Length: 175
Image (cartoon, rainbow, N blue to C red; front, top):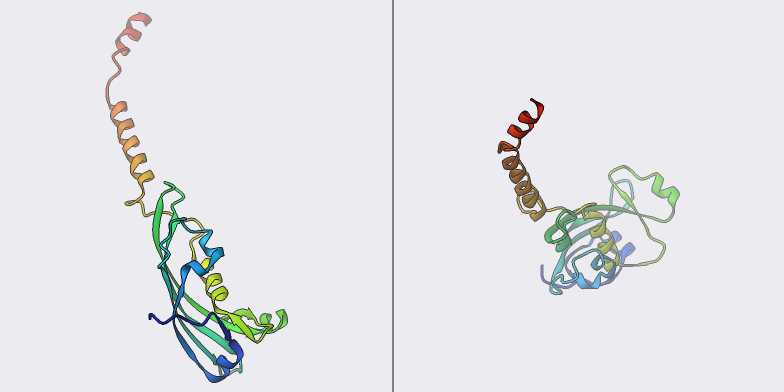
């Protein structure tokens, strides 16, 4: 998937014709998402996108697909950069009002479409932001804060294991 996707598409006509779009979008084109990432995120990173547009048997115009992107987040335990691969499936139904959204089957999330054109960059950016973890954390094996804490705990156990030489003096004082 190396072909760049169009940034703006006519979503209704894509659904009516049952089109499939595959390609990439530059990660740096998503400014709101970039604010949540490590500042030195590689500018060559791409978001791989596969989107299928169509109309289901109930007449609902939908957009489903798969999005993957390598991003760098800040681990909230050790405050260091960590690699994270966003891997999200989306299944959206095009609606024109909140009333239509409430009537959707559970398998769909609503996508409010009030204009004939839709910015794919904004849509994909929204989906990527929703797929990020609430709190980014390294695994326990890879987090320097956990390793450091374990070392401190080991040192504390070693300190507790040594007998206190002043216990003898306390016993003499009590006599």
